[in-house]
Length: 98
Ligand SMILES: O=C(O)C(=O)C[C@]1(C(=O)O)C=C[C@@H](O)C=C1
Image (cartoon, rainbow, N blue to C red):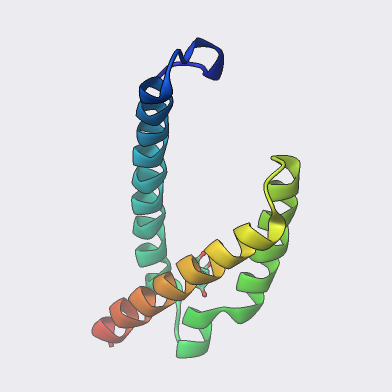
């Protein structure tokens, strides 16, 4: 992947964006493995949903977003969608263990 300074054309830029997005999706896949594991340590649907943890996480991620000069609101939106998906997956896994 080229640095932004080394990108000579739009093709170089898009190749780098593709590379980064592939890594991001890989990381989300790794994250999913931990969410699956989390279900093993929960004893109720309330534990699975972990509403307090979600709100705490979002606050921290909004701070991280600001540190990276990314809109905290956009990061919150992305995370709310992502976590809603993970909660649904985790609920499914958790119920299967009953
Ligand atoms: O931290 C947990 O308890 C998790 O199960 C992980 C996770 C997440 O995606 O980060 C998933 C579901 C819960 O609502 C809270 C957080």
